[in-house]
Image 1 (cartoon, rainbow, N blue to C red):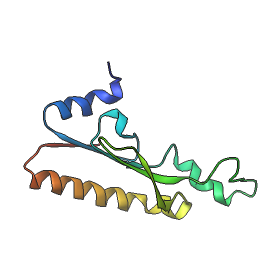
Image 2 (cartoon, one colour):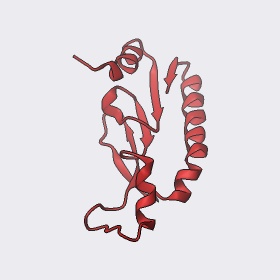
Image 3 (cartoon, rainbow, N blue to C red):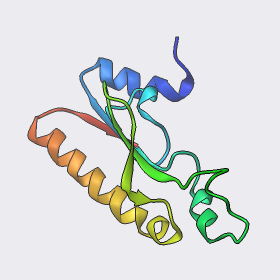
Image 4 (tube, rainbow, N blue to C red):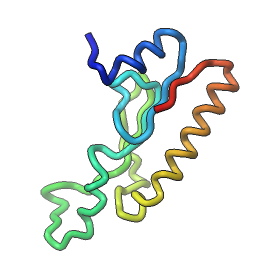
Length: 112
């Protein structure tokens, strides 16, 4: 059984459609590719907080995953206010790349 959050990507995948998502869920929700923050963009504020202790809550990095592989931290992309502000451009770049690859393969796709 799967959740309502998994229904659309799993149905798309079962029909031969590739699925990608940027910014919300990891790959265990049925997407073939995923990229985004681990929990919330609120974490980008932590390093600037004078009471922040990285020993209590380690700094956050953007995450990336592909179907069949574990999600991994992008250690070159620490979640900061600056990176948060630039994330829309990265989502757009990844979305366009995913659509191009899907079209080049002649495969329908679902991008969320």
